[in-house]
Amino acid sequence: MNVLARSARAAVKPMRMARFYASEAPAAAVSDKLRLNFAVPHQAIYKNTEVQQVNLAATSGDMGVLANHVPTIEQLKPGVIEVLENASTTKKYFVSGGFATVNPDSSLNINAVEAFELSQFSPEAVKAGLAEAQRTASGSGSEEEKAAARVEVEVYEALTAALAK
Amino acid sequence: MASPWKSAGISYLKFSQICATAVRNSLKEDVRVAAQRRDANNLKVAKWANGKAGEQKYIVTPKAVE
Image (cartoon, rainbow over all chains, first blue to last red; front, side):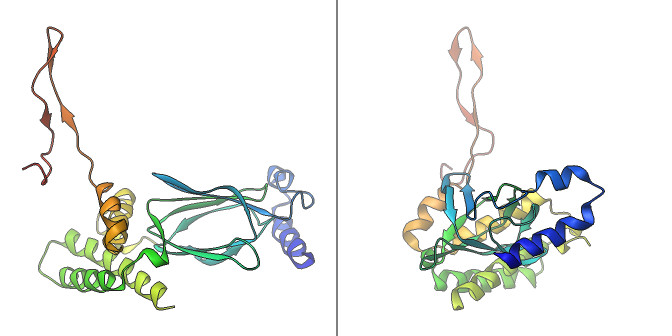
């Protein structure tokens, strides 16, 4: 906890000129728990649930979020979101992409288009999808079709890597 | 630095849709059927005249109906 508080202070310090930022950050640990909201358009997977830690695959890099994290907004890559509910339970979801906002009050909102637990994926379907997308990407379609196929290749590769673990 | 898909003229909405479709395709049979139903959005229109609805028409006829 000490290390955390120190790192949070260090991150807030350079922003001293921007007073609004410092006043919004929690002065002391209000709660040492992270509250998670995790929603897709058709379902709320977590609704204001207290969790220990959440690991995100953001476009700026992989990151772990604990309580009292510095507020930030991150764009999510197609990748794995790891929810450490408590010391013994960890759930892994694959999201197709979206956004995560870390709020000053230790709440974390994750919005994604699609999110499924890793156990719900079929490795064969991923393999078939990857082959198909690679074929289109190196095929003779239009530049836009090929760019779209390259995006698909990236998603399938991320899925392959996630399922291999 | 712009993403490669961005420079190819794909918008973020289109990009996220491509990603979501790929994710839905990779699911196991039972969850996939329900998920892929969410992928399609259809719009029907009908012209109203004298308090009665005219014939309902799809803007873009879905493949399943054709």
